[in-house]
Length: 196
Length: 365
Image (cartoon, rainbow over all chains, first blue to last red; front, side, top):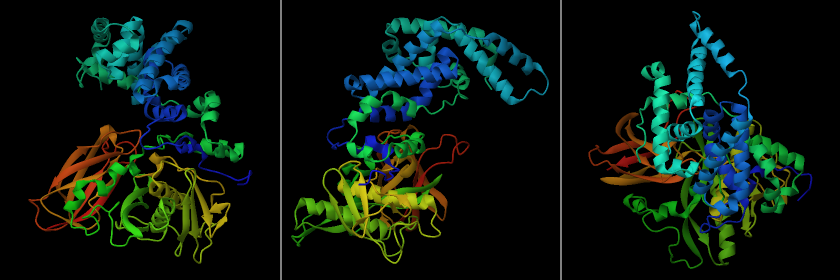
């Protein structure tokens, strides 16, 4: 083989590790790739529901993947790794929120609301306004309620899965869910009647 | 579980609130941050190539999801071998009535095998590879190692030189291309291509770069499937010599397969084979990666749907999973029909490029 030669397909390197059909052992790299493929977007979106900012959310989820890679030898199974990723995303979203000032959010929302009321406002602006209203309502909730609602309504997790992810009891999940949903319904009354 | 109902407006509002969030690709950054571990777990030959070149390749495939875990791409799962599915015997296919994988024959120096062969067909967003199983006689006289090499050689030869059973498939290799020999030493599959009138090193006139790429992938996937030992790298030779390119595609080093999601058809029919006779209730099998594992199927007569239904694959998203469906054709008039399986497109074509489709001609008795 020549050192200068070109190899275009090198990236599938994780796919060439010696494996047999009986051993389902997956390398940390391959696990990252697999879970990234299946869950990167949804996890970033989950984090956006919690922190509102896409750039921050991307960093949060990226760090969660790096952490998962480091723990792969303990996780070993994609299901466990995914559960770990969710947990890491929620926890990291929480800690960035603590440190981050939500800059100009209200100013921006007010401005967009003003635009909506002007005649001829296009659909994109209306969409943006609706989304911001929902994200605002979420942001206004107590932290636990926000997390429970995001996991329940966005990721579609069961009560037991949410309890595991947040490290709280199922009873607590139930009560956060019902209070959070109630608050959302109160704040989003108009949108809930006509979500279009 | 007490889950909120599917139509709960809160669910819609939350999904909608982040529906415009399209995160940029971060796989490369994650890889960079996890590199130390990555280096130690990768095989050294990967680093034989220039680092700059590897970086370029990384960019090319960064958006592709490397869901291929090497060992369990069910496209080559032995469990999915048509010989292992009882349904095959329901077809009047002389090649499939026995167990073709290991059946002893009256010739002690060879045995018949159903070997996997990939051909090029059309997917919703470009050419994709579809798998067929072709029954061939593999020499066994020289021992198991030689037999494995022979299996690879026969399969790849069938891919580049032979004819697909399904007329929807094709091979783009120049006429006269064949396989001189193949070996597999447990690390690298070596395939020695033999060229006809056309120089195989360069991309022939009239062949697009995409066609050349999928042709090379056709050989890689077929060789890996025939070797049956996961996604091993494939070293291509031309007439016994190392070459820098094959069909213009860099090939000096052993090549890994390209990402399965961008290369393999996301739905493939294993049984029935093209043109077989069916009657009563037959079992269709195949592999798919489809939304929520749903695999819709149809039976068509003159392009009109006469039967339809859907089945579930055993999984979805991270690889191709086996599916099967019982198709009751007992009420159909005898004649020629088309059996069609597809991936599910929840948007009804509104987004993306539509479903992947595979078809078979069947003859109802």
